Length: 210
Image (cartoon, rainbow, N blue to C red; front, side):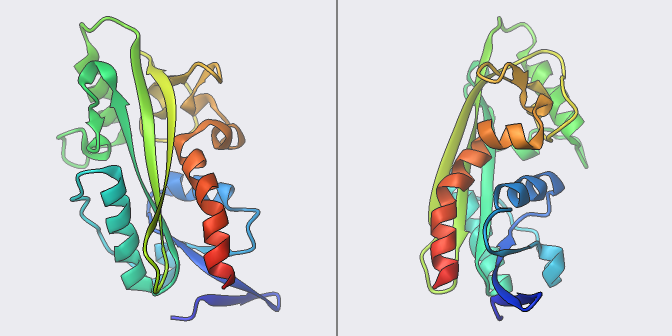
């Protein structure tokens, strides 16, 4: 599949965001907006696949997703796997953050509710961190991994209208706000995903320029 798209007579290399999560797509687009590339998402290419996250680490899950979307598209791909690790819960929900609730068709609200329920009776502060691994895959190349972490504290009430997932419960002392209180621009300064993607950008630009 041709990796070049012509826009206004200027050819730009394409990069596929290997996610259907609208929140992640928005963050990744913002982080990559100054790069001379054309961002595409699975729906742009008619790709509709579900990739089981069967890995035993964020690295493995990010790699699995990147390879699956590379195989489906034939163009360069960026994927990520992210988890919230709460010390009082021995690192849970961790790898299972997106599947933490057992409810069918569970929402972010359900997952946040389960997290707070699990923390009931445990003394605060509930220290925690978000971890992210970004995987970059391209035809004929080994998958490259880039990692980011942000430290914080889980609070017992939701705050903020931005972000997704557990953002409304994750307080960042350095910012003096929850992740969901941050604007997208602010989040791109503090977030685990931003740290990982910024590390990945030089490699992405290198492979797409060759």
